[in-house]
Length: 117
Image: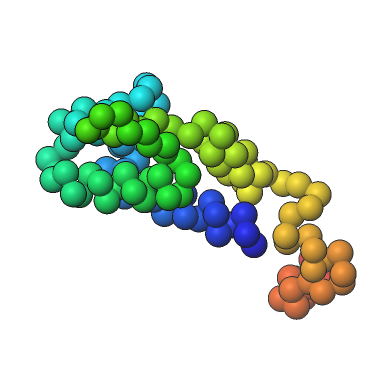
């Protein structure tokens, strides 16, 4: 369950189009906040809010240099998120749907359909 909560936060952060666009921009490399701000019609405080959410969920890393903040993708999080999405969209031996079936506690409706086939 912990993994599902972790990755749900990431997908929720990406559910806002501007944040998804920011991640797309960062796929080309590190950017200063001022460079990101130039691409959007938003205030500095709105950008800060978006960046805070992207950093909190682990997708983006921030580093301070002088008065500017530079942002980049956290590739460890990107790769683990990619793997998580692959895992939950693939048939596998340890799928949560097979846990109850292995214990003989399948869905009654499914069991009835199997009997009718």
